[in-house]
Length: 131
Image 1 (tube, rainbow, N blue to C red):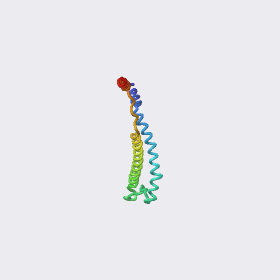
Image 2: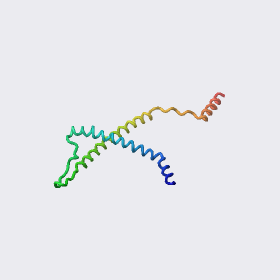
Image 3: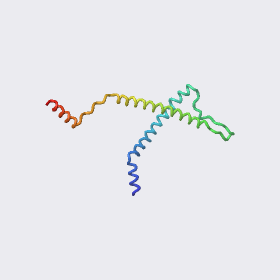
Image 4: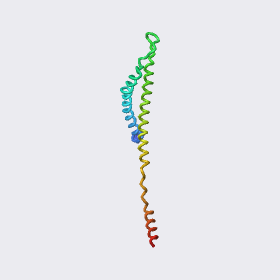
């Protein structure tokens, strides 16, 4: 029973739940990025550069044996495209976030309200001035 209670405590911790949410969002985001690369960016590059899909490339050793290095090369190309797209997205988000933070810093801050002690001391000073 002690292990069950420890497991319940572990699962109930906020960082485990945050991690689970992150994994779920990451999985959904992966689908979006993969679709962006496969359906939009790769065809656009194909139009500009010609054939981009190299997955069919292979080196035939003999009639029965072929080294299909094309899939590996295609995985590298896809990785590089995805890395560039994700970098551009993160860079855009960080730039936008920095602009909003800069605007918040530039806004004039309200002067802090005087504390009760300061108000009382101000009243005493004013009374002494009037005498």
